[in-house]
Image (spheres, rainbow, N blue to C red):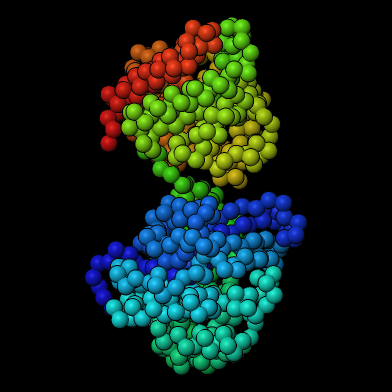
Amino acid sequence: MSTQQKRLDVICIGRIAVDLYGQQIGARLEDMGTFAKYLGGSSGNVAYGTAIQGLKSGMLARVGDEHMGRFLREELQRVGADTEYLITDKTRLTGLVILGIKDQDTFPLVFYRDNCADMGLTPDDIKEEYITSSRAVAVTGTHLSHPDTRAAVLKALDIARRHGLRTALDIDYRPVLWGLTSLGDGETRYVESGHVTQQLQEVLHYFDLVVGTEEEFHIAGGSTDTLTALKNVRQATKATLVCKRGPMGCVVLEGEIPDSWQQTKLHSGVRVEVLNVLGAGDAFMSGLLRGWLSDESWEQACRYANACGALVVSRHGCAPAMPTRAELDDFLSRDKEVTRPDLDSRLTHLHRVTTRKQQWPELCVFAFDHRKQLVDMAKEAGVDTSRLPELKLLLLRAAEEAAEEAGLDGRSGILADTTYGQPALNAITGKGRWIGRPIELPGSRPLRLEHGNIGSQLVDWPLEHVVKCLVFYHPHDSAELRKEQDDLVLDVWNGCNKTGHELLLEVILPESNPDKSESHYLDILSHFYSLGIQPDWWKLPPLQLESWQAISRLIEREDPNCRGILILGLDAPEEKLKAGFADAAKAPWVKGFAVGRTIFGQPSRQWLQGELNDEALIAQVKSNYHQLIDYWREVRPAK
């Protein structure tokens, strides 16, 4: 095999589609009420899964020229997969699969693939220079079912063989996609077919690695006795055969096929509670390719593969359920002590924090999520609160213009509320800015949520919105008050874990308690960590350097994957904030600021009183925002 350095490790060719997963576990597909949208399709899943395992993967396929096609492209790009040859098809729509989880053995699914984009692949789409930019090509069996896609796959395999690339096949047998069942029967995994067996056996000689379940080797080998089927496959190819044997694990066969399973070595699987078998095979393939393409032993490659598959069967979805490299390595470093990885809180948290969609190395956030303060300003000016949504749209305009002028690409954001800031939230969502939304009833102590139960709120939120929860907390509060607040914050944290939203937890010592010792912030954060709460962000007032250092040590110990800390403003004058920035900037865990009234307070008051027009308001707010950005830059220069 060629050992020269290549741009890519593996190019995946085959199915890529959007999965719509029913969210009501235990219901019939007919009774599903809501669906979660994920990247799907066997090859799409493997391109994604190998990318998050650290391989340089590419996806060669077609997607539609529409929202779903763009979604698939963005999901792959986000994890570093190459999409140069993920071709946009102007005449076909992206494939779609609707799936459900009825019970441990019943997973109804319907493929919507009539003339879909990924089945539009033709030999003209296969470019030799792209294929040879990789060390390997991995294909799936579905694309051997149609003359055009079959010709495209064979052209890619021919190029691969001529140039010494490794080649892998995941048999991926779906009878419905070979026209062997009714269109609505996507769940059936095996139907005997001499035609399919012939079509597969004609191409097996192209491969160095062939992977499948026992049923998939039955179709490839033309026998329902697995060892007989494997012997028939061996007659057609010298490839290494990896046969998946369900929860038992898998068997690797490199030479002659033995007469009994006792003559094979079983690479054991991992025990988990099965929620969803869909996608487990693609996760298995992703882990196997990691080991195989890294020239690790088959024992290690199978450890990766079995663990990936086990973690996915315990989760909802396919691609988003796949473990990242950090998550998988953590599990395998302690697999003897983790008997049920699906119940392991450390793995669950690692999955959450290592699958984040965007990185935020620094944030200069303009916070105008204030409600009570602006209502008071409106009353003072004698105007109706119906003007506040208009004001917040103007503040958003100022925020965006200032961020653009300051060059804060990927480093700016806003905090805005649902009560008066919904139009502003709608306007900024989808633009790649950091967006936070408050959930607390302003000024409440004990903590109350403004719009009811956290679950009923988050079900309507865009996933990119960060939950901001302000709690007035003191370690010397009564036990009853602390428990009441703890329980609600814990409920919010669990809700965020369920929906996938990030949490920013803002902590302020209450004005009612004269004891304002900075050391209390370390105590409060330690307490929340002891409850199992690991916010993605903390929001804290300016502190002395010693306090920042102590809090930094706490975060490093309790959650090194924390996003970091943002400094709050509390209507402090600019000079006081500037001084607070100086100490904070020396602590790397402080990533920036989230300040509001210092920026918008006086200009908004004047606008509500009719002393400033729209343009003057925007100009003053921008100037104030720029000033704080400059203060931060003085003490923390941009990298």
